[in-house]
View 1 (spheres, one colour):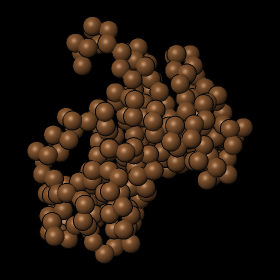
View 2 (cartoon, chains in turn brown, cyan):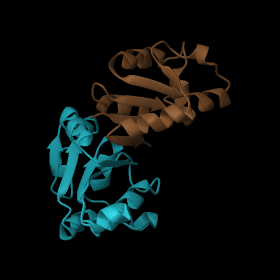
View 3 (spheres, one colour):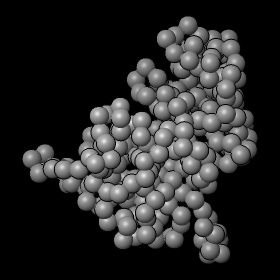
View 4 (tube, chains in turn purple, blue):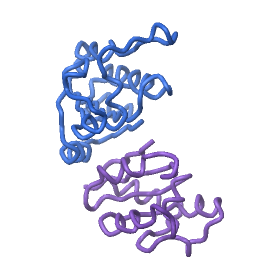
Length: 102
Length: 127
């Protein structure tokens, strides 16, 4: 059974993305939401790390939070899927636990 | 939830502490949640990782700063049957701390072991 990890802070301001990546297990799901969506954007200092993570974990970014910050799905690094609220609910229901890294 | 408690279902809870105490209210609030959960006879686990390891550093003295030193409460958890305390080895090492610097008996686990334990929980609350 897998865990859904949510990361809601920018990796440029806080360390919770690293905290999550260091403890997620193979097959886990990671959802970047709220300010955490900036981690999913191409061409940043962390995009390589997120792209690598997407090979190991199922990585999602929350579409409405991405749009609110002026980014299109096209700006997202490869391997990261854009999720809507319905998908968020499905992921939470599929997971054994949800771990919100604050 | 209420029905589950009434029927005596025991869930595995883990409280994950990741912040230095006193700068924000998180450490104290999590401690209060832990004490509340003890009243519901649940299987409570408490983990300290990243800056959370500072919450159980020995010798906290808050008199001059005017804040309440809540660190003795971690030692009182045993009295509420909360004895599953875990500390991540890597987090201690990164901060130049050892088990001897901690004010309460804990089980020191590697990052991998702790991640595994976390994945076995029914509920994880991280702050």
